[in-house]
Image 1 (cartoon, one colour):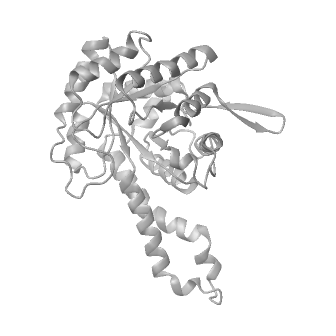
Image 2: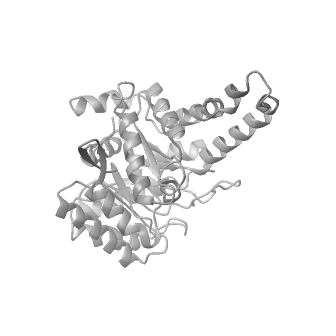
Image 3: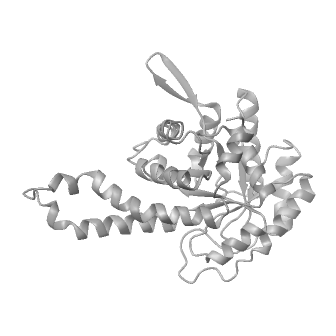
Length: 335
């Protein structure tokens, strides 16, 4: 089931209380959406699907138009996640790296509701949670943008579950910067921030050397700081997990990690599997081959990629402690 912003906030609170984290996969195709939800289903686990600007503008969704891409992405996840097959699995759709001049327009459209017309009926679709890409923004601009999005939510009467991020690729976020960012929003709109993504000694992208400066204890320190500042618990988010060792991730979860973004390794796995498929079956790609269509059509490579990708998603969900959490959460919603 695709969760609403209000339901998503409840799931983040559950993860904080139960010391587990949600896997947030940056997904760029309908096939990858299905693979991720299937992996979650097999483990009775919640999952987050994320998109960045490049997915929204990509050929699978917006084909150059990010707002159309956002609407189509929302519609597709609604159709899959609310199907009989997956209705018992909590699925969140989160907007991730959207930056530049389009950022405010896209996110305000997402909060207000993206019109999706079927026959004579028009539905308003929205993501489960949103984040602001802070790269290129000053601290004051970051605060002002988050506040503006919350004000849009209030004006249109539609809920919002926001994630705020700091300078993620510049080492550790100093406590004074965290205080300025979080309290800059909290003083104007108390209780709205659900997640905070500080710099934790890692960075976006892939590192063959790993991240020797990553300290899981820093997750706990940030969580305690936020609770002291706001009087409530706010989930800590890890961006840039590709390259971290399993033990580093496991320790971060035990220290209070709530959400872990995962993108680069997933792209490597899917693209490498596709290349391997075409190299392995290139003789069967000849139109004269009796099984040409079987191997040349998208379904062939899609199933091959899925077989490589789904086990990795399941391993990460398990590592984060998400296995078996779906049923209990759905019961808490009365589902």
